[in-house]
Image (cartoon, rainbow, N blue to C red; front, side, top):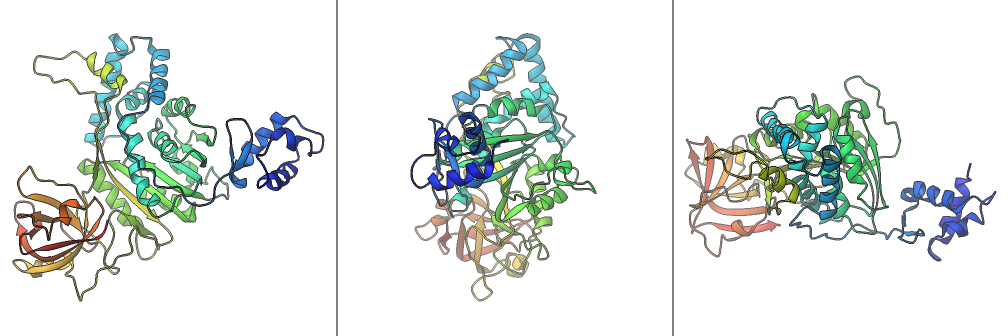
Amino acid sequence: MIDRDAVRNNANYLRNVRPIDPEEIAEYVEGTPHPAVVRETLREEAFDLRLRERDDGSFEPVPEGPIPDSEWSPTAFPENYAFALEDLLVAEFGANWHRGESGAELREAVRRLKTDYLYENDVEYGRMAALGYAIYHLPAYYATIGYVLDDLAENGLLDRTLRVLDVGAGVGGPALGLHDYLPDDAVVDYHAVEPSAAADVLDRLLDETGRNFRATIHETTAESFLGTGGRDAEFTSDDPFDLVVFGNVLSELADPVAVVDAALDRLADDGSVAAFAPADRNTAMGLREIERAVVTPTTGVETYSPTLRLWSDATPSDGGWSFDVADDLDAPPFQRRLDEGADRGATDEPGEFVNVDVQFAYAILRPDGKRRVDVRANDGRCARMADSEEHVTDRVNLLAVKLSHDLSAGDNALYRVGDGSQTVDHYLVCTRETVLNEDLRRADYGAVVFVENGLVLWNDDEDAYNVVVDDETVVDLVAP
């Protein structure tokens, strides 16, 4: 057995002198172990030592400080991952995997998954379902994680050494996106929890990640791994996680609130839970329900983004259907092949098995109380959305978070907003854009705006409040 303390001590001595060569360290360890054994020991200790392995097999210190802005804006699913997925499909079904019986079964698996999600049925991921899921969902989920992480990176809250827990990792969309989002000099201790046949697909795709993205797959349930519902936790390490990811999985758990609570308990004091879900009404609103159950005055957990609570003594209770939209991806070749092989009637349109929309609801939660922007409303300047009934036909000032892109059909621009006190849905309706209110259009999803002199009206058709932004209204961007 190698003397790990000796390896660590020598690595710490050399770290600021020159690259750490396993052959050199072997000479100073009792018994002169083989350099390959030293190299493997350094790999196992690298995260705690803040070391990254170079292409030449030596090691160097990970730079101090948070990761830089990644400027994440993928236009396509990377080829190396696409080839890896097609390798799996060819190995399973042959070169014409998208045709004949296998193609028909894969298309049926995708249709069944879409139906189950729509009607909130229980989803079972056998081998065929896992491969169908990968074909249809992998690219969009790959892109989504980066857009979510942007909220943390902009404030320097992602370190170059990250211990990550990916709960319900599926076939690897969030894992691959995380890998590509981080800079080359980052080191990641990645743990995936995935009990289904998707774990085999995940395992193959993780082969395409770099040597400093060290992955462990735990083929168990989230409840068993974290210890909920009276179970003892299977994972007993004392090392906290810097980031816990729930990518499109919370809607499939029997008690998602308990699982999120347990994940928060495993976080570092300055860690984050990042949860995202499809943009459809049921899953997006379900995510908000979970968020609101977890973020309470008694837990001390805060919503970091995007649904900031701008009134410190208020809690929202509206429907909460809010989601972000990013640019579409190019259709990957494996989706095009599956789609081209479909038998269609005269009225059927192509594209049933192409999924390149990047639309998602998300929530980032933190136990340290940090928020993406430190902005609060006060009664001296603003009306609360909770009090909108008192202000119908009045003009008021509001501090609001922009919680949608333009939802209109091309007429008056329409944006969902919230301030953390709303009990019913609120929208800003721009009936006339001017230079004084154009910040409303320019503001990104999640931005905070101050609305001066907006006209409050009740919309009977939608059971919602419309705040009219016209030529008498000023909108200022408070925080992007």
